[in-house]
Image (cartoon, rainbow, N blue to C red):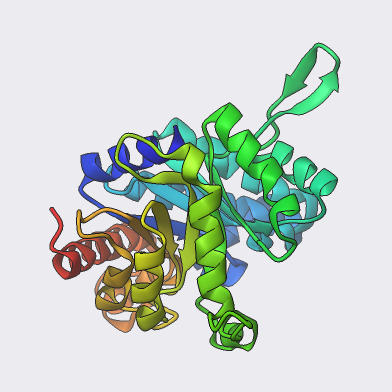
Length: 313
């Protein structure tokens, strides 16, 4: 079961954080770009070869200290077919290093299309009546609940069949999330509270040995007060916490998504780790050639801050 694998890795690494690999070409050190551009040209191919090398070196630097990486699909799709190749290669490289891979795709649609999305990331794609293959074959996927259970059910079914996980958007980290998520319903509850109740209900058949479900939720670190409320509603949902670091969320903010057992949440940081080498202090002392060391140092700092805030490990 996905959730048990995730918690086992968190306990093994003593680290409830995940490194987000959301690359843009401007994040890549100049010496990597220059080499790739000289070989492939200043085009999509050259940019993507740069990004792939960047991703691999960051994975090499952090795989022994984090349980998982999270890839946001948009940062690969923006580079077209070459970007999707990098997406696929990064997933394979991370899994070969023993990392779990969470894809942040926020997928959803009517049931038949949702099934296609689920097959692409969590399940298998039928080739003939006797043969099917995994496409991207990741461990978990973020999904959007806007279409209701019809658009969620295919993902849950594949979670059961293939031991995968999903994180359903409940309270996102962006500033305008309240325009819809904070609206009050006729029941006197906010939309995010109703969503949390559904997440708890939809995940009841996927509860693992630690008491948590493979059907989890997304709650931004930028909304700690809402996180307190939602943690009480979702007793069994594991929470993916974006918004830490560059978006302004702190370890103290993220701590509200954890349960009393010290489990219950995994916190993501992307830019603050990928671009750690760009800080004035690091760039002056060590330069961009040691960017992977900067990423590792930032990941360790994040781990320690979260553990201190939660009283864990």
